[in-house]
Length: 168
Image 1 (cartoon, rainbow, N blue to C red):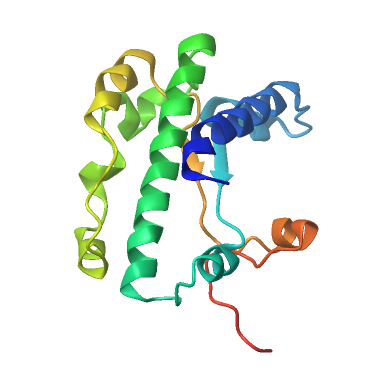
Image 2: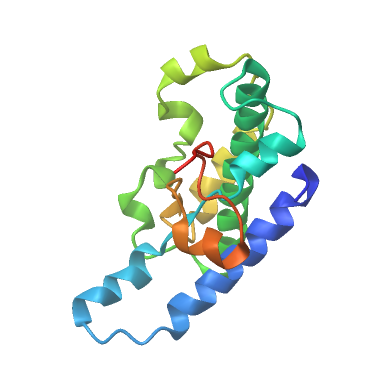
């Protein structure tokens, strides 16, 4: 995808996942808490190919900068889409138990040591999310999960997760 397409794509993903939460039949009563938390795990697959297409070496300063840019944009788009869906359908039941309810964003509590790995400044208008976040809340309490995505990558024929390709 292109950077400019990301918001529409993640909005559609979250919209579909939200519908699944509502349609899901929970056999075990305790599992129904998933409806209140609405945790999803949008992640990354085919990262090695993403870098290779751009002639970037895994771990190079240029790769780290572009990775920071894309991951920041992805997180921003996911939060913005979750707020928009909450505006239409309401915040998740456990919204008040999250940092989101206080308008706390990832830029407020991430490990600042990460900034030593790149030179890419923050590019998104994070402050524009604070008030809508406090007003509407989040439809999803968790949005991302960046682990190797073996099953998704196999289905699509992509490299898994964010790890570099290694010879077996």
